[in-house]
Image (cartoon, rainbow, N blue to C red; front, side, top):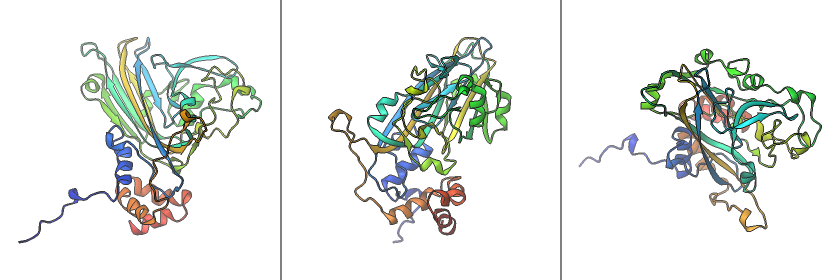
Length: 347
């Protein structure tokens, strides 16, 4: 009797850590992505957190709405056209209101549980909610690498505010993200010039929601960000002076590592709720240790701190994900010496 031939579909992942990580990159809304960690050689005990937010975008008096989603546990998204229903107003350090919505999670909740964090993977789901009989208009969705900080010209960390704080503009921030813009709004017609974009009618997106899975685009995706600072350089938390900003390196303000997602719709019915946006983040971080029982988060890290064989298995299988091998070969050495050369030669 001839034994059955093994097929590729029957292959079992090298370990659960790898399969969960792959799910966080390719299926971020799936239950299989819960507990995702970056399978690198970081040997300190970590724990995982998952944040899911739902936003509603409403069109303005011109029938337009837009949103820029970034890979951050603090500032999830911003809308240059104030399209986020119930969003927080963007206010500069001198108290000037720019009336542009910014949505964020509660920093205090995260900083009391994790000393630092990194985004393992995240996803954006876009659902049309307007009535099919009035659902006119079109939507453009684009992704692009973003390395910029929030538009911040002064020093932070209990240092004096720079006078330029009074002139923070949405346009400068969009430029830092790499988003095409005209004055303080997203230039919708220019979004198709970005590396990845898709256009759809609003009717179609009501029938078929679109899920965007941003790619890893730089080594900074594997670095940890600070959770101690809770006030960026503009007033998210009703801060009216630089003195309110906590001491720290503010590394959490950097959005690099994963692609940014830009969503823009035009030709819609005016002042109408058009889109529901669901965002999910898979976070990994070091647990915060405190004598207060309510503030402790235990680590569920694997018992083996450094597993070279498992690490090689991870590299082999993850390098099969489209674009990941090219990224590892091109940029791997910059965040782990010899990694790019290893992936290029062995896998």
